[in-house]
Figure 1 (cartoon, helix red, strand yellow):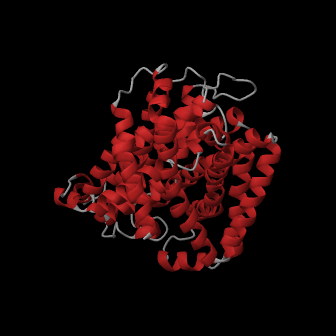
Figure 2: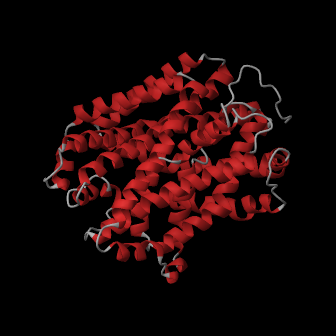
Length: 437
């Protein structure tokens, strides 16, 4: 495959900052704020954090370079990128279509999660959960399907409008606002958390590792799964965003920055939530309901808690939207390139497919569980393994490395390919195997 030098009518990001904010938006999602803290609680506290950081450094960052780098080389959507790398139209189209459509399934349930966060944002403003049994409050709201559906429709519409406006006027501009806001809000929450009695005990759980727990392979597997899925490796989002880079943009430093910012959000969320949760006698291993049942109860006990709740759920909404727009942009850009669709047509079609599928998920919990399990676990995990095999092994990690090294301040050496093949492939295979057994 020859690298593309055709910039044609393809939009480029407005600046390095614009790309970094947008790509950080792919990585920074609700999982950073909701899932990371409770995984810390379930997997040995600081030991999980150590494993997470190691996996991020030696696997997630190289994989991010791989996908952004191949996107920059081809300057094509995901489907055409797979065709070009495999040099086989039939196989490339099949695999590329599969990868392209995974984010569509993701948004069918992910936008519902954002809708929940939007509800709790509004409820925090109005004080709906204040003074209540927060678990009972959550259970009551979960039965109000029309309300959740209405909010789902709103966040779906917002996502579609942002993507419809394109790379610079839509995605770039929106993420320039949302990502910095997330950092500011989490910093405010952290400062307030530090003033609580008992913060030190919670901080020790979060920052002082029990090194023996690192001997538990399940801690490493959970860290690998969270790290790789958090960055967005596999379902084509980083390829799509990388395809809008200029030929001379720095892939290595940009990828490192994106992964650093993603990790920083997760760490900030953990610092703000875990110690406060322990300080006030709550269980940090409360699972997915940590932010909907436990945190409102926590906010209800502290001075200024309602204001903090408003800020917190605003951060969750921003984090969710920054990811949902990448989920939509991936099939939109792929079908625009492969089938020469207009952006309007692609957004309308995939927006309607997402809305229809998401509507079914709202009203039927069993279908929601199936979609979230298959799209969010099985299909997502498999796409990550396919990515490292196709780009790292078949096309060749060294070919991608040689291309992005030409314009990168930090040069990757021969160890780059070894990281992907010796560490990356087996780890991804184990993650996928664990999902299916």
